[in-house]
Amino acid sequence: MLTKPLLTVQEVADLLKISDDTVREWIHDKSLRAIKFGREWRIVARDLESFLNARANRPEGDGP
Image 1 (cartoon, rainbow, N blue to C red):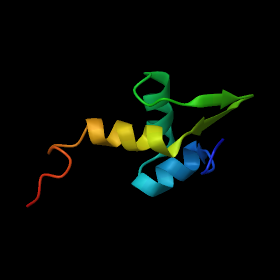
Image 2: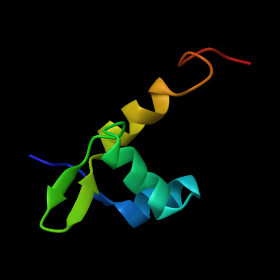
Image 3: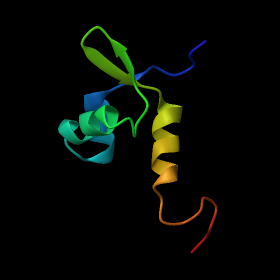
């Protein structure tokens, strides 16, 4: 079913070079889709990509 592992809050924060508190705020605000396992959140890579694409300042594929 899953071809890629789910990302932790810390992994997303590290990838984006931001604090884990910011990632948790996005999850809390329901801006970033996440799945809760016990006390831990996991993010599907595809959902992170969608979240980032929705906030891009240029349409995808729009070259320089």
